[in-house]
Image (cartoon, rainbow, N blue to C red):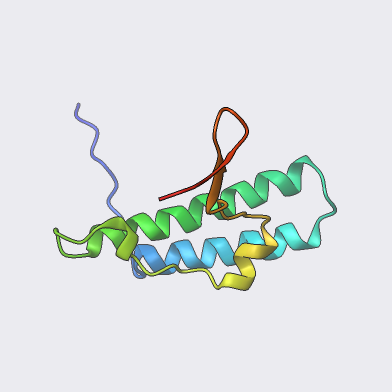
Length: 101
């Protein structure tokens, strides 16, 4: 006997479901005190946001580069997650500062 797959017709888009899930997880993480459960929820929020970016990237025309995908997160939300930008300057092996290109 062959087992048939149960098919389910989605009523909302993947982007909408990911956005809702990220919002739900973000609110739950904010209500918890710092600890492993909160850290796990923030990780899931980042995963949902990454999935949103990938989905948007795949929807772009084929010749578009990933850097052209508009971010789905406001700058203030990114800063609240402790994300840092790389410094435009780097240090060489001998300790002298070298301007990056």
